[in-house]
Amino acid sequence: MEIIEIEDKKTWENFLQNCQEKTFLQSWNWGEFQKSMDKNIWRFGIYDNEKLLSVALVIKMKAKRGSFLLVPHGPVIGISNFQFLISNQISDFKSQILKTLLEKLKIIAIEERVDFIRISPIWKRVPENEVLFNDLKFRLRPLHTHPESSWKLDISQPEQHLMDHMRKTTRYLVLKAQKDKNIEIIKSTKIEDIDIFNSMHLEVVKTQKFVPFSLEYFKKEFLAFLPDNQITIFFAKYKGQIIAASYEIFWSGIGFYHHAALLPEYKKIPVSYLLQWESIKEAKKRGCNVYDFWGHIDPFKFPKHPYAGPTLFKMGFGGYCQEYVKTQDLIISPKYWLNYIIELVRKYKRGL
Image (cartoon, rainbow, N blue to C red; front, side, top):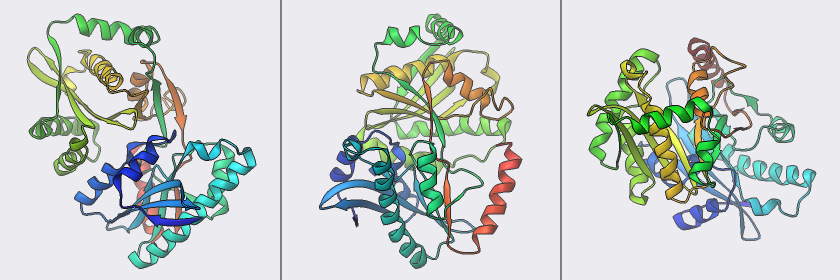
């Protein structure tokens, strides 16, 4: 196997179109967004006899506590590579992919003077995948960067089928909101409307006390996906006032529920249910077969977790949980331990 930097958007996106396990964090436009935020990125393709087997977007992350190379939800492997392989051959194949990628990342890590390499794999959380990272001397991260499990819904079925398979309460609230003449759902692709979303986001931050994304972050992310018509903001109005919003990405046959906000004083108005349903219908219109609700935590196992409530909301629409191998760190420098301690403290402070 050999690793080559890919500079052609079509080659990159066409490969990902035929991959099963993927998220927009490996999309071409996510790389463009990172560049707009002044991040160094590399787009690597792993080849065997000129056949593209896997891709990996790599981002250099800088922080006062240390810098690192991040592979978000990657590397992604083409599903066709597994068609004629048995179980142990699949593990060997994935191991070769990881080793080839890691050899390159270690070189970059030294050149860029980073303290560690972090990989957030999109691979299923099963022992045979976890052992691949253990064998390469990775260790579990103290705090994840991106979701390590996600709630997903197969939306290839007709709308009525999806409605029938919702939790009874969820279906009731969707229908109730549809009948309420005071509630209106609107879509926007106007950059100026990011300001509205951001102001609502900051109101949520006040009550939930988490570190907010910046207005610059929202705008540059929006502008990265907008030229390909892959992003939309949904607003919910109640009696003419915008009280809720969701930030949706539609990419490579999947709809993603990426960001959301609901003004706290309107939490008893069921606009979020209708907002979500309209987003799902939009994903279907765009030809998506899967709707990814993004992060998931088991609300029954961890009822006090800050994400337990949002996860119960997502589960009401039906679907299934998909768990990924937990985020893995490879230590390059002893400075890694400063980052480790800081992230560990943050994890406990947030109750994660």
